[in-house]
Length: 345
Image 1 (cartoon, rainbow, N blue to C red):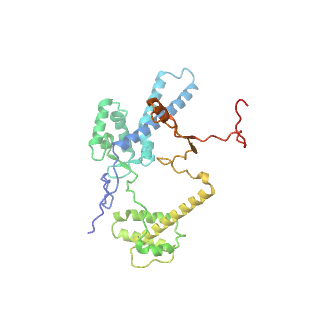
Image 2: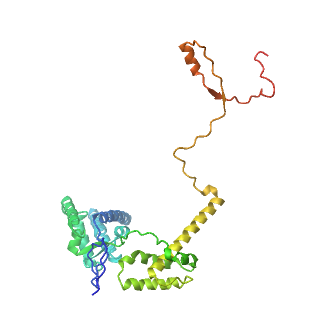
Image 3: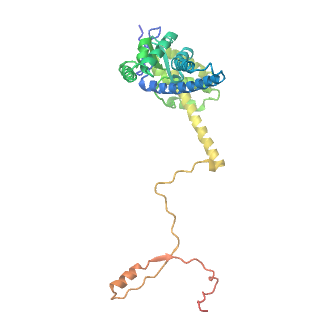
């Protein structure tokens, strides 16, 4: 009997398919569920505001004798029930177990056995949530602590409403590890450089890349059958045929690696052409940490004052204070070929 492939490490929901295979599904924990709840609270507040404005505008058109405090209180109660109970029940019933907050975060409510959630289960979850969880009409503080404690201690992160209704909240987005683009295969590098890949479209290349990213998770004979099918489609749109004697996954990796190399070359060529045509569009390189200072202006030497042999300390200090160099004088209007006239001439 062939052993079934082991589920991923993050598959902790404990859901089993009809073929007795454990599914790679993650159970939603308190962090993602609180985020979805906050988004749902915002949606419910917007819905409550819209209902209040609509009902208020309708009541303004009625005669004064028909509108009293009892009618206003009854309408407010009905609106509160619709927002707190009707909103999650209707969303989970007609949106595949997802409210607006769960849909944004990537969560879904299912039965404990993995089946779609029923309307009865959604109603039980909503009633238990309103009573003892959020907003918690019965002992708010104590019920909040109890609800958080149950979610933290449950193996699959279920709350009180899930335990009563027999439901489970799972992630709909798979947590897969990032994998780089397949590199060129050295044994097929010569063939890959001469292969014509112009008819290989993006959809088929994406399917081959996804297969290579998950090939280690697949078991035979499904892995070989899927690889042969993909290589049959890829080999039909490329030429010439590769050397024989290698697995299909190696051929797919060589094709994708060469396709990625050519895409990088085209991108670099396009950037070079754009830089030559529109230099102002190219970002300037960052300034170095220690910029090179510009050269100093031309300096003319200034003769030092000769100190006498027996100079006093004051004369020595004055001589040292004279700068060794000074900037050259700028050309003057008097430098036309004659000498500068004296002030008295």
